[in-house]
Amino acid sequence: MALFQSCLGVVLAGGKSSRMGENKANLLRENQDMLSYSKSLLNAVGSSQVIVSGGEQGIKDLVADMGPLGGIQSIIEQFKPQALLILPIDLPLMTSNELLALKQVGELSQQACYFTDHYLPLYLPVNAFVEQFFQQPLSVMKPKVATQKAQGNRNLSGPSVRSLLAQVPHKVITPKNSQCLFNTNTPEQWQQAKQLLSLQRKSHV
Image 1: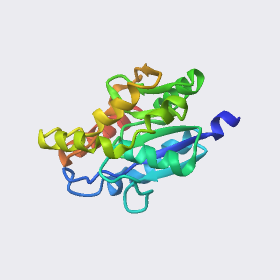
Image 2: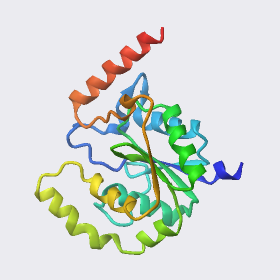
Image 3: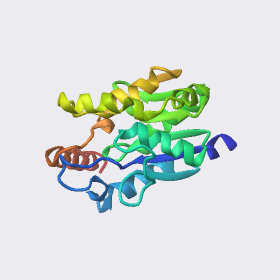
Image 4: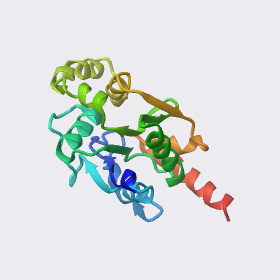
């Protein structure tokens, strides 16, 4: 189906991983690094191609230090996709079923789609609303990011992506298992995620 061929999978891997102390992309999840796992999820739900944004081998941002928004804009400009399915690198409990549900609701409605209280992962059709948002130069938003850093706001992705979603039609869905949105920014959170994975495995035995 052409609909599925037009959706580009994006792994957001541009974070500095400073709180983790090592590159999140290289963390091992059941003998598979997180970059490979994230790519496999996006492939499993029918992405026509999977692109890595940021990181050592990924697409570099056109405007530096703009967080996820900078990566999204750069990929739209370089690849001209009809839609994006965007997945952060730090969700070891995400499943293909949850991601597929997000993608299907977005495709059927032709609207942006994200999970309750979480702006990422995100299904984003590249429509006139999105194009209009990115017509304003991201460099204009840089002072806002600097202000957030000065105020100690650790979730710099929120306001940026939220500002995009405030200007585009969107749907919000609730995942069947909220644990899939458990993100890992610190070694303690990573260990907790591994314990949750272990419990999930035992429950399916």
